[in-house]
Image (tube, rainbow over all chains, first blue to last red; front, side):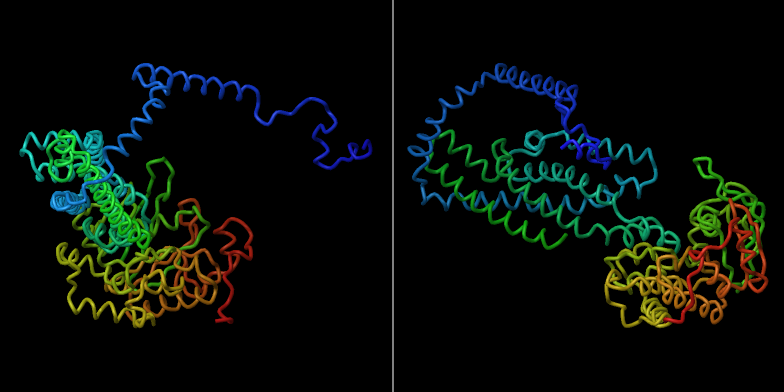
Length: 279
Length: 258
């Protein structure tokens, strides 16, 4: 043993027979991490007091959920499907229409919001600022605003989801544009192409797969978002869901949830498998 | 004719790319610009079509000072200058033909080009350019399916489709193996001879420069340190231009294994 520790290879230079423990993480770092952890736990505790949501209440509530599901929701009112399908179709139409229009409008705005295409710093900053403002507005607030503007119904939902998806799409697409290979843009600039030709021939082919993929992704988001928009009067299945809830028709509600679940699952599965093939 | 009169270029970060360049390049010449990386070869070539803009002096082409051109006039002027890049700069996801047709963009209206309404004459011209570099059969294949040498030929075809008076090539063979390098250089030489298109080519390989150039311009630290016919150049000249002894890396090797 003594002979081994006298070897001069690199690994023996570690104090092998020293009794002092060698920390993996320095003590200072450990204390810092511990303090941060305690502060975070403390904040959670304060939040739970402020919202009156102790874990105890949550646990006590579980039986209520159980009885609600078993006694009230089951069995669903199967014959109610004929009343569910038309608003479900309306929900789908709201999502599809708003997404399609947003997909068209997002493209020019995305190029204005991409620093490698739009070299005018002031315009770039203005567009970015407006988009940041747009994205801070939740879809429900947009829906309430448009219900107030154009009245209760599907049109308000279409407007709300159009602006909602425009915000998301421009963010995603403009970031894709900023990450493209600048070489082809340079080559087209060198042939004497103007900015529209640079975009059309240099940039668009490079972003096309991501652009289509993001469009499908936003369609998925919009289908789910449009389900609840009806709660504030923006058309679709949310409208009858709220009605039935205020009438305590739990059998009907179960049917609405069931059909919605199936529809959303189908749409998501198709869209996801399409997107997998794209990128 | 291209004429540099006291041209200097200082980048926004303060780096001086070109220092008081005075040059004349005649029509139909095959000029090779040599120098170590960072010597200003790219800057010199890119200032001709103003992909970078010189900050001082005059750059006359056919007697007109191009540095005073408006954006619109500059685009019109660039139509007559083909450009070839080290990384080919093709749109990889587009077809070969579409990449070559990009050479017609300067001649095509914005709306027509966005709708891809190229005239049949333009399409024929594009195909003919592909024929001239020997890859017409690849017209409908996606650009990223081709080898490096084939991609560089596509970019030569794109430049040819512009029907330019001048072709600028910025390190056109730096990413290619020796036999392919020679093949591409021969394409450029043939175009120079057959169409009387002026060639300005950046190279760092000594043997390629001596073999294909009519005239060699040596740059060091943004200054012209040599300018003379290729026949007058020896390895000693390159040692003077590079400011160090010649190394094996400075040679590409011959085309014997082509």
